[in-house]
Length: 102
Image (cartoon, rainbow, N blue to C red; front, side):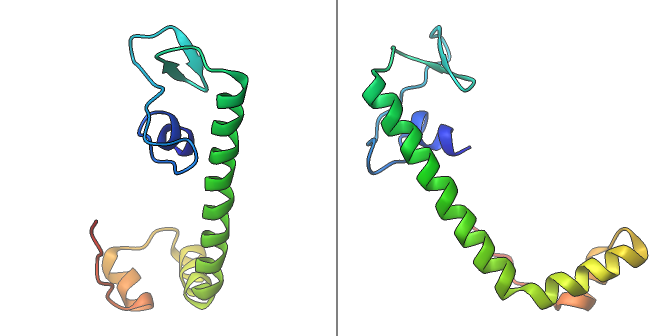
């Protein structure tokens, strides 16, 4: 996903708003077909940006899990008891949640 963000969707400050992916091209980078060959410098820049995205999201995930640890433990306990939870059972544990949309 992070490689697609950088190579296909141009979602990178350091690489820029450029798409290197083309479904018709023959060059392949981690499953993405490239519209042209990449220089070693560009490939390295892409790799570093992908790594930065993954590291950043790992930190965000850890913070979120630590912040929600008590809820996570309650839900895990319920799942160990019942294996599955309905929406109503989950809301009984976690409280009703407001859905955030993009």
